[in-house]
Length: 153
View (tube, rainbow, N blue to C red):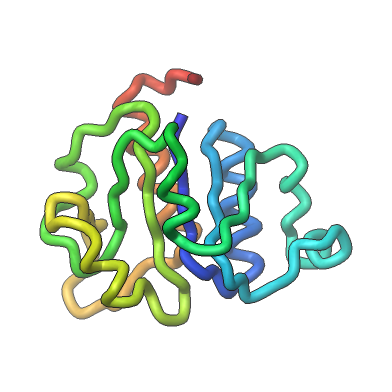
């Protein structure tokens, strides 16, 4: 299917929503440490992360560890700094979407690892900063899944 990569997520309900998205779309979710919350059972229930057992969630100590996964077809950074619209990209099964932290986005050192063609943006009204992380992830996954005619890998 597809992959969602969250770089140092900080807000548990956002990650909970994305876990639920992953469980319902067959998307693999990769969380890059450090996390701004704990993933023990009690914390997960309290934060609305109760879909974790239904989703395919992987935790990685850093981005390099995550990028070594052989099932990643291509990686796209979803960023308000992208020049290319998400909807102008053709997706294939196995593509991955990388999102930055809710509080600080992606560090420049991570941005520098990707080409401009890999940086995609969602259309928004000029002057607005960004969409909610879980909303942006949903838009990206559903557009990619739509393009593959909702196939389940």
